[in-house]
Image (tube, rainbow, N blue to C red; front, side, top):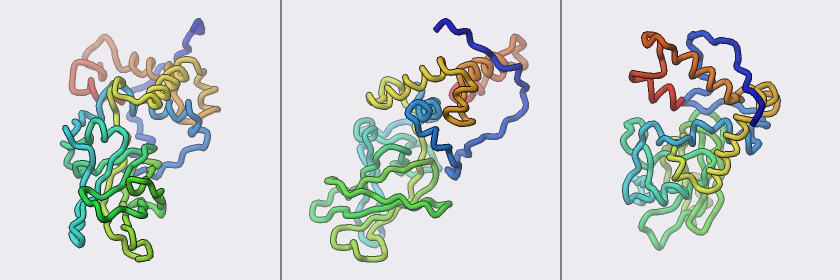
Length: 251
Protein backbone atom coordinates (compact mmCIF):
# COMPACT_ATOMS: atom_id res chain seq x y z
CA UNK A 1 0.00 0.00 0.00
CA UNK A 2 1.49 3.36 -1.06
CA UNK A 3 -0.85 5.41 1.07
CA UNK A 4 0.91 6.96 4.05
CA UNK A 5 -0.52 6.32 7.51
CA UNK A 6 -1.83 9.41 9.27
CA UNK A 7 -1.11 9.31 13.00
CA UNK A 8 -3.49 10.91 15.51
CA UNK A 9 -2.34 13.71 17.74
CA UNK A 10 -0.13 12.79 20.68
CA UNK A 11 -2.05 10.98 23.36
CA UNK A 12 -1.72 11.48 27.09
CA UNK A 13 -1.19 8.79 29.69
CA UNK A 14 -4.52 9.31 31.40
CA UNK A 15 -6.33 6.17 32.47
CA UNK A 16 -8.89 4.98 29.99
CA UNK A 17 -12.05 3.21 31.13
CA UNK A 18 -12.69 -0.18 29.62
CA UNK A 19 -15.50 0.21 27.11
CA UNK A 20 -16.52 -3.46 27.21
CA UNK A 21 -16.63 -4.87 30.77
CA UNK A 22 -14.89 -8.22 31.07
CA UNK A 23 -17.40 -9.82 33.41
CA UNK A 24 -20.64 -8.59 31.88
CA UNK A 25 -21.80 -8.87 28.31
CA UNK A 26 -24.56 -6.25 28.51
CA UNK A 27 -23.07 -4.00 25.84
CA UNK A 28 -25.10 -3.32 22.72
CA UNK A 29 -23.26 -3.30 19.42
CA UNK A 30 -24.37 -1.45 16.31
CA UNK A 31 -25.69 -3.78 13.64
CA UNK A 32 -22.96 -2.67 11.28
CA UNK A 33 -20.34 -4.43 13.40
CA UNK A 34 -21.84 -7.73 12.35
CA UNK A 35 -20.32 -7.23 8.93
CA UNK A 36 -17.68 -9.88 8.30
CA UNK A 37 -14.75 -7.47 8.21
CA UNK A 38 -15.94 -5.32 11.09
CA UNK A 39 -16.66 -8.33 13.26
CA UNK A 40 -13.22 -9.69 12.52
CA UNK A 41 -11.61 -6.33 13.31
CA UNK A 42 -13.36 -6.04 16.65
CA UNK A 43 -12.32 -9.57 17.57
CA UNK A 44 -8.78 -9.17 16.29
CA UNK A 45 -7.20 -9.21 19.74
CA UNK A 46 -9.23 -12.30 20.63
CA UNK A 47 -7.65 -14.52 17.99
CA UNK A 48 -4.15 -13.05 17.69
CA UNK A 49 -1.29 -15.48 18.19
CA UNK A 50 -1.26 -16.00 21.93
CA UNK A 51 -3.26 -18.35 24.10
CA UNK A 52 -6.18 -17.12 26.18
CA UNK A 53 -4.40 -15.24 28.99
CA UNK A 54 -1.96 -18.11 29.43
CA UNK A 55 -4.68 -20.76 29.43
CA UNK A 56 -3.54 -24.33 29.03
CA UNK A 57 -5.48 -27.01 27.25
CA UNK A 58 -6.56 -30.16 29.03
CA UNK A 59 -4.76 -33.03 27.36
CA UNK A 60 -6.90 -35.89 26.04
CA UNK A 61 -10.08 -34.11 27.12
CA UNK A 62 -12.73 -33.57 24.49
CA UNK A 63 -15.79 -32.64 26.52
CA UNK A 64 -16.63 -30.91 29.77
CA UNK A 65 -18.67 -32.74 32.37
CA UNK A 66 -21.35 -31.52 34.74
CA UNK A 67 -23.07 -33.95 37.10
CA UNK A 68 -26.66 -33.57 38.28
CA UNK A 69 -27.04 -34.54 41.94
CA UNK A 70 -30.64 -35.54 41.25
CA UNK A 71 -30.07 -37.87 38.30
CA UNK A 72 -26.38 -38.75 38.47
CA UNK A 73 -26.12 -38.03 34.74
CA UNK A 74 -23.16 -36.16 33.31
CA UNK A 75 -23.60 -33.31 30.84
CA UNK A 76 -20.86 -33.04 28.18
CA UNK A 77 -20.06 -29.79 26.34
CA UNK A 78 -17.76 -29.44 23.35
CA UNK A 79 -17.04 -27.35 20.25
CA UNK A 80 -14.91 -27.73 17.13
CA UNK A 81 -11.75 -26.61 18.93
CA UNK A 82 -12.14 -28.51 22.20
CA UNK A 83 -12.84 -31.70 20.26
CA UNK A 84 -9.28 -31.45 18.89
CA UNK A 85 -7.25 -29.56 21.51
CA UNK A 86 -9.17 -30.08 24.74
CA UNK A 87 -10.59 -27.34 26.96
CA UNK A 88 -8.78 -24.07 27.77
CA UNK A 89 -8.54 -22.26 31.12
CA UNK A 90 -8.24 -25.40 33.23
CA UNK A 91 -5.97 -23.58 35.72
CA UNK A 92 -8.30 -20.63 36.33
CA UNK A 93 -10.01 -20.61 39.72
CA UNK A 94 -12.98 -18.51 38.60
CA UNK A 95 -14.27 -21.05 36.09
CA UNK A 96 -14.89 -24.76 36.53
CA UNK A 97 -12.71 -26.84 34.26
CA UNK A 98 -14.53 -27.45 30.98
CA UNK A 99 -17.29 -24.95 31.80
CA UNK A 100 -15.95 -22.26 29.46
CA UNK A 101 -17.99 -21.77 26.27
CA UNK A 102 -17.18 -19.43 23.38
CA UNK A 103 -19.33 -16.76 21.69
CA UNK A 104 -20.25 -17.46 18.06
CA UNK A 105 -19.04 -21.07 18.28
CA UNK A 106 -21.51 -23.93 18.23
CA UNK A 107 -21.51 -25.63 21.64
CA UNK A 108 -22.67 -29.24 21.48
CA UNK A 109 -24.62 -30.36 24.53
CA UNK A 110 -24.91 -34.11 25.13
CA UNK A 111 -24.84 -36.79 27.82
CA UNK A 112 -21.55 -38.45 28.63
CA UNK A 113 -21.33 -42.23 28.53
CA UNK A 114 -25.05 -42.84 28.25
CA UNK A 115 -26.55 -44.83 25.35
CA UNK A 116 -30.17 -45.31 26.41
CA UNK A 117 -30.89 -41.60 26.97
CA UNK A 118 -30.23 -38.49 24.90
CA UNK A 119 -30.64 -34.72 25.15
CA UNK A 120 -33.80 -33.62 23.38
CA UNK A 121 -33.97 -29.86 23.97
CA UNK A 122 -31.83 -27.24 25.69
CA UNK A 123 -31.63 -23.51 26.35
CA UNK A 124 -29.23 -21.04 27.95
CA UNK A 125 -30.35 -18.25 30.31
CA UNK A 126 -28.20 -15.14 30.69
CA UNK A 127 -27.47 -14.47 34.38
CA UNK A 128 -27.86 -10.69 34.22
CA UNK A 129 -30.66 -10.17 31.71
CA UNK A 130 -33.80 -11.77 30.31
CA UNK A 131 -31.96 -13.14 27.28
CA UNK A 132 -32.75 -16.75 26.45
CA UNK A 133 -30.82 -18.72 23.82
CA UNK A 134 -32.87 -21.57 22.40
CA UNK A 135 -31.00 -24.69 21.42
CA UNK A 136 -31.31 -26.56 18.13
CA UNK A 137 -31.72 -30.34 18.18
CA UNK A 138 -28.87 -32.21 16.49
CA UNK A 139 -27.81 -35.82 16.00
CA UNK A 140 -25.47 -35.56 19.00
CA UNK A 141 -28.11 -33.93 21.21
CA UNK A 142 -28.61 -30.16 21.25
CA UNK A 143 -26.57 -27.21 19.89
CA UNK A 144 -26.26 -23.74 21.46
CA UNK A 145 -24.66 -20.62 19.99
CA UNK A 146 -23.79 -17.96 22.57
CA UNK A 147 -23.77 -14.42 21.21
CA UNK A 148 -21.69 -12.56 23.82
CA UNK A 149 -19.46 -12.98 26.87
CA UNK A 150 -21.08 -13.40 30.26
CA UNK A 151 -22.47 -15.93 32.70
CA UNK A 152 -25.18 -18.37 31.60
CA UNK A 153 -27.14 -21.32 32.93
CA UNK A 154 -27.68 -24.21 30.51
CA UNK A 155 -30.91 -26.15 31.01
CA UNK A 156 -31.45 -29.54 29.40
CA UNK A 157 -34.46 -31.78 28.86
CA UNK A 158 -34.01 -35.42 27.94
CA UNK A 159 -36.19 -37.46 25.62
CA UNK A 160 -39.70 -37.98 27.05
CA UNK A 161 -39.12 -35.05 29.46
CA UNK A 162 -39.90 -32.30 26.94
CA UNK A 163 -43.28 -31.47 28.49
CA UNK A 164 -41.89 -31.09 32.00
CA UNK A 165 -41.53 -27.55 33.32
CA UNK A 166 -38.32 -28.24 35.23
CA UNK A 167 -35.23 -29.27 33.26
CA UNK A 168 -33.66 -32.68 33.74
CA UNK A 169 -30.18 -31.18 34.05
CA UNK A 170 -28.76 -27.68 34.48
CA UNK A 171 -25.28 -26.23 34.84
CA UNK A 172 -23.61 -22.82 35.05
CA UNK A 173 -21.15 -21.85 32.31
CA UNK A 174 -18.95 -18.86 31.51
CA UNK A 175 -18.80 -17.44 27.99
CA UNK A 176 -15.49 -15.88 26.95
CA UNK A 177 -13.50 -15.30 23.77
CA UNK A 178 -10.42 -17.53 23.59
CA UNK A 179 -7.09 -16.40 22.14
CA UNK A 180 -5.36 -19.11 20.14
CA UNK A 181 -2.10 -19.59 18.33
CA UNK A 182 -2.71 -18.45 14.77
CA UNK A 183 -1.47 -21.84 13.54
CA UNK A 184 -4.34 -23.56 15.36
CA UNK A 185 -7.14 -21.48 13.81
CA UNK A 186 -9.51 -23.28 11.48
CA UNK A 187 -9.80 -22.07 7.89
CA UNK A 188 -12.84 -19.85 8.53
CA UNK A 189 -11.33 -18.12 11.57
CA UNK A 190 -7.97 -17.70 9.83
CA UNK A 191 -9.69 -16.11 6.84
CA UNK A 192 -11.64 -13.74 9.13
CA UNK A 193 -8.45 -12.83 10.97
CA UNK A 194 -6.55 -12.03 7.78
CA UNK A 195 -9.50 -10.02 6.42
CA UNK A 196 -9.54 -8.03 9.66
CA UNK A 197 -5.82 -7.32 9.39
CA UNK A 198 -6.30 -6.11 5.82
CA UNK A 199 -9.14 -3.84 6.96
CA UNK A 200 -7.08 -2.35 9.81
CA UNK A 201 -4.17 -1.55 7.50
CA UNK A 202 -6.13 -0.26 4.51
CA UNK A 203 -9.14 1.60 5.90
CA UNK A 204 -9.10 5.27 6.84
CA UNK A 205 -10.04 5.71 10.54
CA UNK A 206 -12.96 8.07 9.87
CA UNK A 207 -14.38 5.78 7.19
CA UNK A 208 -13.93 2.77 9.49
CA UNK A 209 -15.90 4.44 12.29
CA UNK A 210 -18.65 5.43 9.85
CA UNK A 211 -18.77 1.86 8.53
CA UNK A 212 -18.35 -0.28 11.66
CA UNK A 213 -19.17 2.04 14.55
CA UNK A 214 -17.22 3.98 17.20
CA UNK A 215 -15.25 0.95 18.41
CA UNK A 216 -13.34 0.65 15.15
CA UNK A 217 -9.59 1.31 15.40
CA UNK A 218 -7.22 1.45 12.43
CA UNK A 219 -3.60 0.29 12.52
CA UNK A 220 -2.47 3.90 13.03
CA UNK A 221 -4.18 3.90 16.45
CA UNK A 222 -2.28 0.84 17.63
CA UNK A 223 1.05 2.06 16.22
CA UNK A 224 0.61 5.47 17.88
CA UNK A 225 -0.42 3.78 21.14
CA UNK A 226 2.74 1.69 21.09
CA UNK A 227 5.01 4.62 20.27
CA UNK A 228 3.44 6.87 22.91
CA UNK A 229 3.97 4.30 25.66
CA UNK A 230 7.43 3.23 24.45
CA UNK A 231 9.62 6.23 25.23
CA UNK A 232 13.44 6.44 25.38
CA UNK A 233 13.31 7.08 29.13
CA UNK A 234 12.71 3.64 30.64
CA UNK A 235 11.22 5.19 33.76
CA UNK A 236 8.17 6.04 31.68
CA UNK A 237 8.13 3.04 29.34
CA UNK A 238 4.85 1.28 30.03
CA UNK A 239 5.26 -1.30 27.28
CA UNK A 240 8.62 -3.00 27.93
CA UNK A 241 11.12 -4.21 30.51
CA UNK A 242 8.60 -5.23 33.13
CA UNK A 243 5.46 -7.09 34.11
CA UNK A 244 3.43 -4.88 31.78
CA UNK A 245 5.01 -6.30 28.61
CA UNK A 246 2.60 -9.18 27.99
CA UNK A 247 -0.47 -7.33 29.26
CA UNK A 248 0.15 -4.23 27.16
CA UNK A 249 1.00 -6.07 23.94
CA UNK A 250 -1.84 -8.58 24.25
CA UNK A 251 -4.42 -5.88 24.93
